[in-house]
Image 1 (cartoon, rainbow, N blue to C red):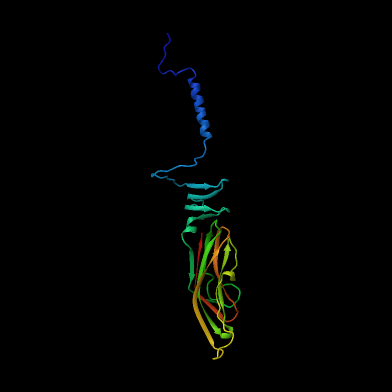
Image 2: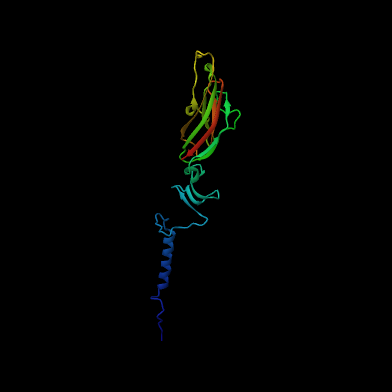
Length: 236
């Protein structure tokens, strides 16, 4: 007598069909496309000691959130050169430096002051936009005669990822002169004031760049005293 159990599979090909179904599911999982869109509820998502990376169409990283390659944590963009640019260097305001000490300049070429420290200067990271806004100011005093009154100027020198010499095209300057002595004779005169300006730099190379103030005496006459010097640079 043949006993048929109620646990027996339905049909002799049942096991074969199950194996084929499992094979189909494995193939579908292997061929599944990457998740392209998703919504996360109020519970949020937690990443422990890891990172979220954004890749371009060619697979190159362009942004990273979480643990950064330098070992720190935060949000960073990655420039085409591979330079990591953290959010803190791009969006948390300008980097500034100041020096109240005074020094003089007698040369008509841009350079450093005599009797004072170089600069001041700041170092910022230029992002993939290649742009930065620089502000600088100083006070200065002039002494001399009406016939040989000196004039001055202050510009910015870039070094590091960008090497750009100071230029009179964006120089904070003054001009004070009288071609003929006044009726009282060749008298000594003096003047002092405070001023500032800004310049928009563009088409810069991404990467750390130092902005340093440089000074000139446009007439090579007399002495120009610069003091209360300050610079601020905002990359964006």
